[in-house]
Amino acid sequence: MAYQQNAGSGRQYPGPADDERIDRALRTELARLSLDGLAPDVPFAKDMPLGQSITIAKETDTAFAGIYKSLPLDPTLCPRDISAITARKYTVIEPTGVEIPIEIFQTRSLKPQPCLIYYHGGGMTILDAFLPPHRRWCTDLALAGCTVILAGFRNAYVPAGLNPFPTGLSDCVSIFQWVRENREQLSASSIIVQGESGGANLALATTLQLRNSGMAPPDGISISCPYISGMYGATPEAKAEHLPSLLSNDGYFLNVSAMAHLARIYDPLDSSDPLCWPYHAPAESFRDFPPVAISVNELDPLLDEGIALYRKLLAAGVQARLRMNFGLTHVAEFIFRGALPDHYDAKIADIVSFAKSLAQG
Image (cartoon, rainbow, N blue to C red; front, side, top):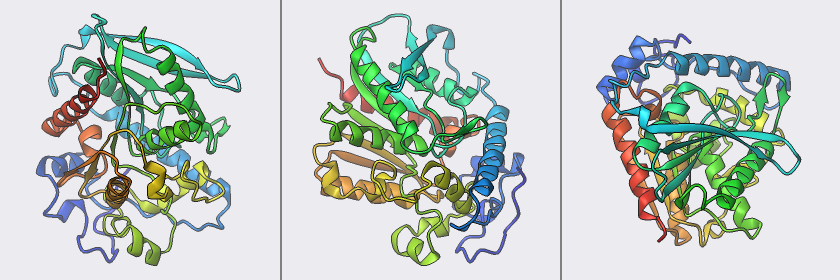
């Protein structure tokens, strides 16, 4: 995916290659991958044929899967003895009878420890759950002292067809219920839902759905760079008023119009349903929510979504915290772990510390 250099956009800053704010190691890595320009613009209009959005989704999935598969996972970059972890595959049966794959990552000693349910990024629409970076993420979290469930929820786009909202959410809720029912066998001292980008959306929406259904929520929520507004195809005026980072950081690794195509596949009704887009949930919807830890990145188009969520949680009286990663693009500390090992290790430590602080008994 070759990124264009310094496209005219009206931004205050010209793009990653020339932005003095960007982390130097990240700039070098983006340049190595030819990603240090602005992400190519992808025209979007709400009256475009759905097939056009499907084509964009397919191309985006191929491009990002290619990036993910090319990333180095050499353990010398972030050295850990991964032989201490066992990975086992299971199947969760969703209420309609669909089989949802999961993978469980644990240390060999089954002492009580926090259980993290990991929902991967990709706008709820693309990227396979079991790509190597996702599995390595779960392995590293397990090595740091957690049991980790890798959730293979159905993406809204797969080559065989479409699975729009609420399909993926239903899968995530089913996986959570399976974990709760098997809490004792998993030796789970707490259950935390965790995810980045679209996975952050699903972590929040799962908790809202559980609470709406009268079921016990998770013990905590840990999310990064939340993709939660659905406003990627909105007018520039609406973006400037509500989420200005969708304009100021557009093209920094992510193109906002491309995200609009993915959102359209996930949400063909273009709704503001809070279960689809938690940004639109009123503050009172979050009352009695479990503790929430949010991290956002300075050069991410989604920056303001995480900040807006944090303020809404505080207004609802939720125990919430927000951390800013300066100089980083969208989930760069996760995607570019080899170039940013300190950021990656700090993220692992922060999530595990949060999870352990919520352990019961």
